[in-house]
Image (cartoon, rainbow over all chains, first blue to last red; front, top):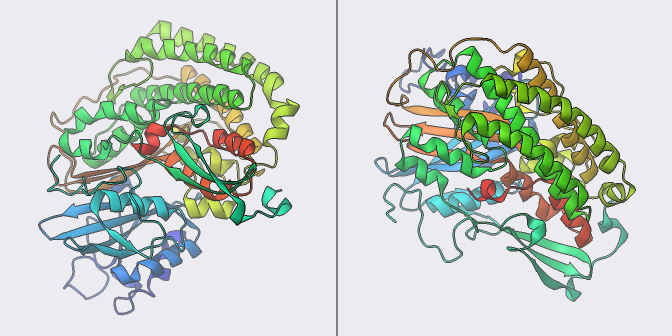
Length: 172
Length: 374
C-alpha cells in the first residue's frame, strides 16, 4: 500500500461520516460517493504534476492537533506553516505543509480556517517542536493567536510591532 | 557523547551571554541569547529578524516577472537554486514547457553555484575553528566560478538568470571551455582539501561527537539538506522529488550516519564531488536547440488555485507555495527556506555543550541569515 493510501486511511478516523471514499481527483472531480452536496470532501487527492502536492486535507481547528499526531506517526516532517488572508469571507486560512524523508513521495497540505476578527488556533508545538518558529511567524504576519504556544512573541518583526503586514488591509 | 551526560548543570548559578547580532562567528546579523553555567550552555534562545525585508509582501505588490530579482537576495550564496524554485512554481502554475537545452543549462549553473556556496562554507567554517589558510584557497577556487557565471548572467552573486520557461542568455564556447578547465582543476583542489583539512586531528577533535542531531530531532524540526543527510537520512529533493533533468543524470547522494558536526562536514565535501560529476555529464551531452519556449504567455497570469514547488539548494529543501487569484500579482507567496528549520534545532541541540563547540556546531549548520529572515 502506498503512503498516499495509508495517509488517506489514517485520516478516515477524523471524518467518520464521510468515510475515506470521498476522495475526489482534482480537475475531473469524480466523486466516488453519492454525496453531491459538497463538490469536494475534506480529503482531496490532487494532481501532483499541476499542483505540486498530493493530498489536500481540510480540518476544523479543533481537529488540528489530532491531524498533526496522525502525520507524525506516519513519519512526516514539518515543512512550514503559513496563513492566507481571505477578507471577503472574513477568514484567515492556516496552511500546514508536511513531507516525508522517503522515496515514496507524498506531500500533504493541512488547511484550517479561523475567523478574521479573532483568529485563534491550537498550537502543534507539542508534537512538532519545529512548529514553534513557524507559528510565531504566522502570528507576526497575520495575528493568529496559537493557544498553548510556549513563547508567542514577535520573531521576525520588531519586538514592539503591533501590525500584521500580510493582512490584505495593511498599509505601510 | 553529549556533554550533558558528563556534568550536572546548576540553574541557579547561571549568567546570560549575548552572542551577536554583530559577532563574527554568526556570519551575519544573528543573535543567540545563551544562558551559561560557566563555559557550558544551559539554555539558548535564537533571536531573528535583524535583516527581515518582508519578501513575501513584495511578491504581492510586484508582477511575477518583477519578483524574480528578489530570489537572488534571499540566499546570496546559492541564488541560482532559488531562481530555479521560483521558475518551477510559476511554470507549474501556468503550464509552461521548458526546452531541453534550457533545462540542462539550468542544472549546470545550479550545480556550479552549489560548489561555490559550499566553498564559502568550507572556508568560513574552518576559519571559525581557527584555520585561516583554507579560506584563501576556497575563495581562490570560488573566484573561477564567479567569473564563469558572471560571463553568462552578468552578475557575480545575486543572479537573476532564469526566466519563466527558459533563460536570460545562452552559454557560449568560452564558458564551456572555462567550465571544463575548472572541473579538471577542482578535482585536484578537492584532493588537496582532503589532505589539508579532512584528516586534520584538530578539526576531528573539534567536530567528532559534537553537535549531535538525531533523526527524531530532524523530523520534529523539519531539517533538510546536509543537516538531515549528516544524520543518516537519505533525503535530497533532487532524488526524492525529481525535477528538471536530474533523473537523467548519474550522481549519488552522500549520506553519513555520524549525526555530528563531522558527518555534516563530510557530506558537504562529497557533495562537491557529485556536483562536479553532474557538470561533467552535462557538458558531455548538452543538446542544441532554443533556450526559450516558442510559445509563452506575454503576461504571466496563473489560473486561480495554489501550487507548490520544491528544489534542493546548497542548504536543503527550498519550497515555494504560490496562491493565485488569477491576477497579475501573486495573491500570497510563501517562501520556505531551509536554514530557518535547520537553525531552529540549534536551541535544543546546543544545551550542555561548551560554548566553543557550540560555535563550531553553528558553523556546521551552514547558515545564511538573509534567507532565514527573508
